[in-house]
Length: 317
Image 1: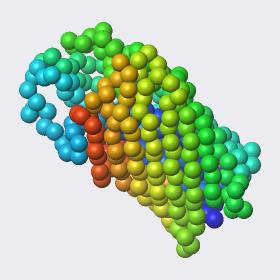
Image 2: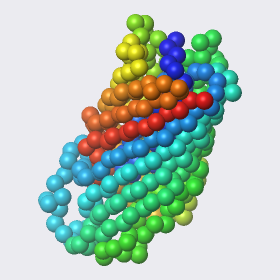
Image 3: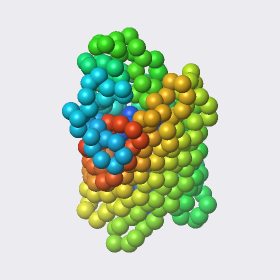
Image 4: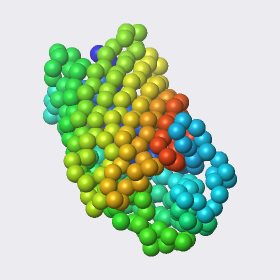
């Protein structure tokens, strides 16, 4: 079993802290949970800080792109223009033993959104900043002697705001779509299963799936049930540098409720994510990943990113 230095483990952990929102709002499906990848297997405390940057500026319907200029204004449906996302996620992870672990993930958002609402000819603008929905996830991986098979269970808590309004334009003062708010307002159950292994010659692999189940609706909104499935390879034979490659899949059902955008929610997204981790010594590691879409199927009209970038710092104590 590959056992990289503790700081390397935190890198993956931070990436896992991506917000658990609708994919149209989140945009990032990268797996950063080092425990589920077999990188963080030793007891101890780990800290991770990750920055994600991506702009959703490609309007899509089904599996194809849509030219916004082909949609006349005013239109009977909303025509979104762009959503710029700059996210910062703090993750604290504690493993009292090789079998048990607990992670707390707190995201903060800076999100600028531009859209033309149904019946309007001019765009409306919003800016949302602040704390998102915190996630608390426990794990157990003591089923096998090498701790290579594990389960996860936890909650996404309704800590983020979900009443942010448009700041300017024809919709000024009206609430932004719930799928674009810092939080969903709901408590969601998180259930996961993962397996990892050693391929020999410094190669390692992992596979993981995480199910997200909203437990109730909140003020006329219930996010869709979703599953994230991830698989990856890494090569540890280059000294302080560890290249990685992930395949990330997210399938999400439509939102529901009076406050939901039912017609324009729900998607199946597949991404390829190459990345590199650098060991800086003393339990500190820096990392960077680029995520590019290889398949996108959305319901209705939705904005999706053409790529996303994640960089971070991981510290193990």
